[in-house]
Image (cartoon, rainbow, N blue to C red):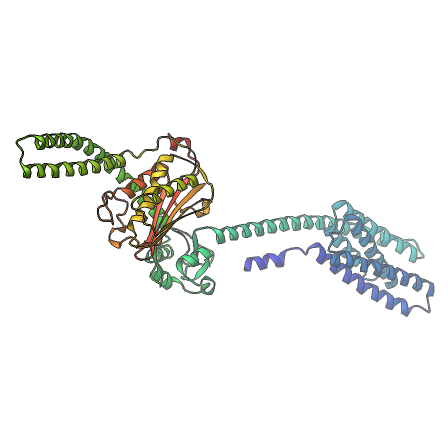
Length: 552
């Protein structure tokens, strides 16, 4: 702020201000001329009358100039400025004439007029003003003096013209310097506005703490992330409050102030007074201003909750791939011996040597073998989750088909209400896999209900701002399954997508694992939000268009 004020004091006045000064000076001279004409009216009536008319004309042009510059706020052109220069030169010539030039000091007013219009007009027009000033001064001198001008007068004229020339050149240089300064000031203001707009709208928090631990700057995102009253804390000590909210951020800022240490990639935890905690990624930089013993520190930090969740989802997908490969191998190794055992037991049960107890045990073995065979089939289904082809699919039509199928399922209760939200939404995907994803989620919600339940399945295209941070999705389709059922128990929520984990008695625990693998096959993302007793929401983000390398 101090540098801005200094720059403002040292800068040249703008065109409107300079013209205002000229108008005021002209008005003062005009009033003085009228008073002088009144004093010599009896001695020189004709001359005083002509001068009074000239003053009235000058005041008329002054009023017109004020109207154009201040009321219409139009930018004066070269012709306008030249006419105003002629009026000012005429007024000055009148003053010099009445004051008894060249002995008076009033001829110096010519220099002021030439200097002012040299700042206002281009060099050629400014030079013309200087020539006109010399001509008017010379003409008035020749008119008022009876004897011929002597050498002293011509020396005075030479000095005046040199001064005019120097003033015109300096005025032009000052005008160019003023224009450059104005251009630089405008550009600086534009850059500041852009920087301020960027800092206020970026998704990262930015704060600056000076060498004394006082808050120098904080953007709205940082205020929200740290739950601080930023504007009220400007220029006040802030380190204690930073330490309460994030010890890692506080330590990074303190290390920058004390040791000049910078952090390029760090992580920390932010804790709010309400108990909410979330991870942040942070970096710091330091800079030292003049007359400052300790450096100031600027910290940039971002809520990386979404990024952490995405990383966890990718790690979970890798684990599922490993489990799927193992499941496929085990299923093939177990299925063949199991089929042989089942066939042998059936043959033994049919023989005439088997009594009733042996037949009962044989039937039990056959039933358990069938159950194991079905479980192995589910393992193979889990292992074979692959996207075979990506074609344009109306996900809304797939949802409609799934809902009709679930409504006819034996496990679907009569008091289960399933509604579809959203309109036709096209994406590129594997229709069979998408069908399995929706069917698993809706059927799970139906089977988990102990009483009446409402399930809403919605589809919509979403913009980049609605997609969780940390993904590579730009244009996505959001598939959401919401229910008001019993919710997911706390003890299995963190392992919900792991194989063989189920909250339902008798469930294989592979349904949600299949959902996870099918979504991952589409390079998508599945999130879950659930509280016991309040229902569950599964949200899936799928790319609207598959890239060639993803589909390969």
